[in-house]
Image 1 (cartoon, rainbow, N blue to C red):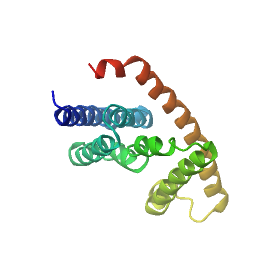
Image 2: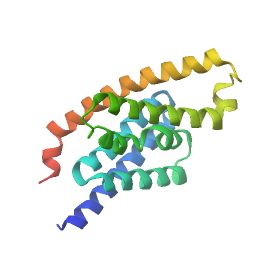
Image 3: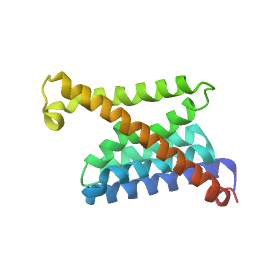
Length: 170
């Protein structure tokens, strides 16, 4: 199999697996956040196996398909706003030799996404109005949860690298 064929096949397979995960998340709301976070692992696998461009392709394809064909749009929206693009950015940020710069960039991206959600959906989701202590709680709490997510995501990527990746390269 040629390199271009392999790259396109990987993007298609990882995109399909992402959409299936988003579908399960959309019909099983109690595990929605975890399943959407799990769906982002396929973009990470695409980055590992075929590079950043393939990871971006998986994000774009699965986001588009998820928004078009899934019955409930909340899971694909979470994927688009928070989880889908993160494996690509994580790969870029972790190339830095400075851990402080890496974490500042990661937290800036997360808080920018949270701010966008805050302004777009605050009346629907948060309903806090302009209450600053509640906003501070959401940003600090969200950042702490994000750090835990990043740590767990890193461990799952290492699990993929050590257990699954070698079979993908055959």
